Image 1 (cartoon, helix red, strand yellow):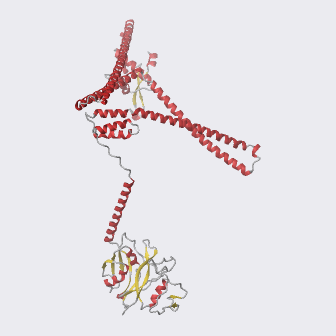
Image 2 (tube, rainbow, N blue to C red):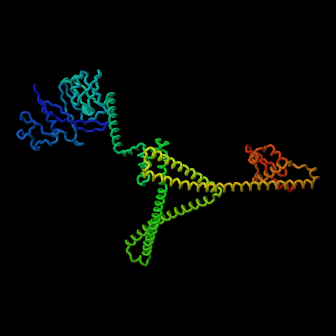
Image 3 (tube, rainbow, N blue to C red):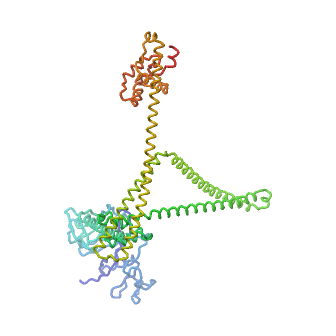
Length: 610
């Protein structure tokens, strides 16, 4: 039996991962047999299109076969919804009615539209596999293919004996089409047997193959993104500097000329630095490198002068800015004075209320701006005062240097200058020798340029020798002055020693006289001080304890004495202080664990007692 088929646009209801109902449009064409004209007309009416007849017979009573349209409906054009390539948009408020789907071996009946949408699990990444449950017990793999091949190309079907299966599609969007069939009731043929019916439940399924393909795709996208970023970075990367040429005599002469030019100095210095770091300096090229380094050193004075000029410009600009700011402040003061004079009662009464308000607002604004500028000017002046005070402090510290240190620094500077002049002389001699060797090899004695160079080098050598002689003379004078200072030092030290000896002699004579005057007292009371060393120790300890009125421990006293003489013993000092009971006394201070013995000086009290 020959059947006539027409194409029908099928609307699809998909469910997002958050279980919210979304309406999508699917352009998959499904065939409806024209043997059921009522279903065909219902479908066309749901789409908002006029149904077409079969052999000119109208399906609906209002259809005019002569015009090919229904009365009251405009003519069908290719731009009308439903006839184009893309289906028309569905309004969100429009109710969507799922239709009956007829297949060769089965029929799919739509679910009740009043029921809630079927629940689905969260969609796995890269999902191409669906779970289909609720299949009829007599359902075969051929029936499953017949129902779901309309959603797209099927790669694999894994059917279970428990009325469910897994279907893997070729693309991800085909899964959304398959989910549209969730909730449909399936019936095999025209049978009403329970084994030939079932309710389909379609849901996302998690498959390792889908996840693997999705990860591969993500890695490919990441590689493409990295490649794109790398290309973008290479495009935006600044060009690399030109390579530095290798050292040669010709390149050396070019760089030496560039070093003399201020505009090309930075480029030439970079080349010189690269050559030195590469290790191009050797015995033959040392003189050339020294001359280039000397040329580079000649730019130091120029750079210092440029810095001084810039600092001068900066000071002038600061001065101009300060003058301009002070002028602006004067004008602000004048404007504020105008506002204040206008606010006096003599003129204030003649202004209207709005004018008074504007004048008061303007006066406040002008005062705020004036205060801001005044603070800025005061800050500038404070900074200048701080700089001046720092300069004065530096000057005072510099003036405190002694004459001896100044002479030593001058002598060291003369030594360094002498050494540098010797090195320059050696360099010039090496250059002269190299020029002589080149002249002997080339046999060009009549070359005027080389003769001029030799004359210039000889003149430079003579000047350097004269300068070296002057420096040597100055160095000798400074050395003589240093020797005189050293001799004066030695004489002063000898005089100090003689004075100390005289003092010790006088002290001995005094003690001997006292001994001769009071022989009875010596015999009666033996002196606790046995030697001059002990007397000196007593004097030093007395001075030390007099400075420490709260006393000091024996360890503290001995540490002070051992700085003067390492041979002093703690036990001897303690024994000596114990013998002099009227001069020193021992007390316990502190509480508990902090208990400590301290010696104090009591000579003034002991003098009264004795």
